[in-house]
Length: 86
Length: 229
Image 1 (cartoon, rainbow over the protein chains, first blue to last red):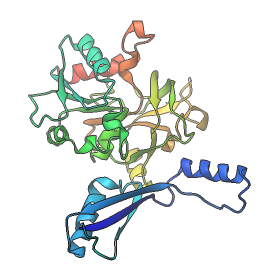
Image 2 (image 1 turned 180 degrees about the vertical axis):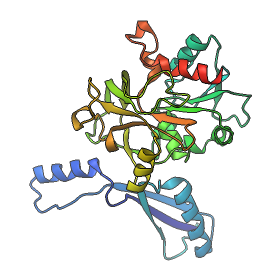
Image 3 (image 1 turned 135 degrees about the vertical axis):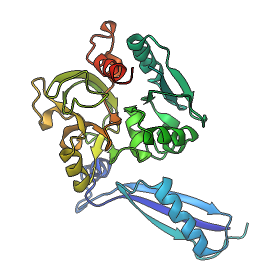
Image 4 (image 1 turned 90 degrees about the horizontal axis):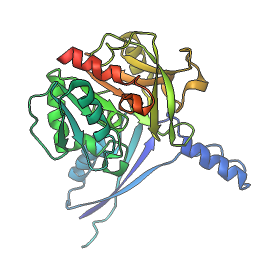
């Protein structure tokens, strides 16, 4: 099995009102110097797959078809370094 | 008019739109469950408002890949008019039948109120009951209605007359104050390349009967009836 994580983030230039609200709230709490906050999604996927290249290709297709909306979002795939024993 | 209303788990405007269609056409629309893979012969398909699949992942994302949507895409390719209202608009963008995406409202709040819309293109089966420049009133009720498209897509929509409705003031003026959700250029509804698919955030079915307080939405269903028979 391979453990993968996918980060889905809004593309630069796409307004992120949630990130802005969090930024303002941090400022209200006294955290100075917060220049920007962008909010995204973190998705864990366990794959019954041992070949990392194939796993990456599969995850890439998953991201393009469902996990991310590439009109507004970017995605980054990370596959854990070592195979995890079941 | 042989109309169908697609029903997903979490749809909640399906019966309202079915009522509006029945009142205008005198024919009961078919209610089509999301698991269906075959559709009967149809003149119109409506993807209704609601919270399909609980808005999981992104609004409309799961519904866009449901079995019935494959059949809806085939009918769209064949030129059957497809009307997506509110969540239905989100589903159509996620399914790739309409360009762009619907983001979280700029004000971060669910907005539920009547708005004014300016009809921008009256040469479609959906809008032929209106005239370009006409100001109509329709309710909105959404949290993710902030229309976004990249600059190139936006320019194409404008050049090709594919903005069907824009949020406006009572007199038809387009300004920030009359934009309820931060939508790009005040866009409330857009058409596909052939003008056969319309997605809009406002709810025409919620103002299609005098008992609901207005009938500005009714002309959309009357226009469709006139267009498809």
